[in-house]
Image 1 (tube, helix red, strand yellow):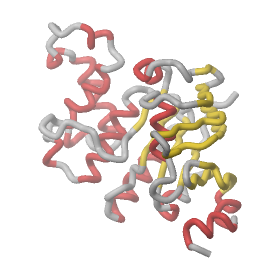
Image 2 (cartoon, helix red, strand yellow):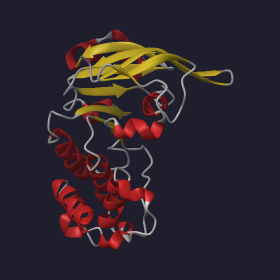
Image 3 (spheres, helix red, strand yellow):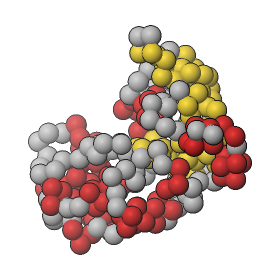
Image 4 (cartoon, one colour):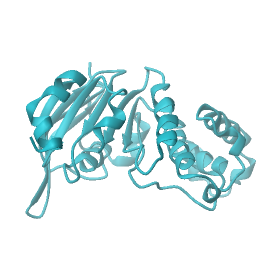
Length: 245
């Protein structure tokens, strides 16, 4: 059984082919890193996996279940969660409120607009637990706008983890962070239990090499190299893409 399988996935926007015949298989509990220069098609691949984009061809399977035609909203209920390259949070709301809203998305209460969110003590308690998991419970009542960029990244990861995912997609979680903030986020990600399979996109190969067990290199929408850290780093194609050799 594979946690996530992508087969011959392709996507074009007009005459621009962004994803071209991408295939990959991620094992349960694996830590997979997807790297490539800007424009390689990394985020488009995530958008296809989550259903935010429809592929022109190809198939996507989650734990051997074909989800190619499953609507995006249902895929998250099946066990996929993700973060975004550009942080998509509510800056005027508190950290607690942001995480509570993410929990609400999986609750039947989301269909009842008459139920005051402030009275959902069980959701709030769960949100505090998730914030504690990422070391931010002491900032629960602080508006997001009054936190650092690194703290907001950790809130975004907390919101994804709050959904109890089986597969977690992280889109450049280190982007824009200081060296110290990168260490904090890397420590957080590496501490996630193995019952969660993680696929991470990263532009800077040096940042996330310690995280990855297997690495997939994308270039112009195609998989050009795949293997262990040592195999990918030593591959001539990787050196050509990153170093121009």
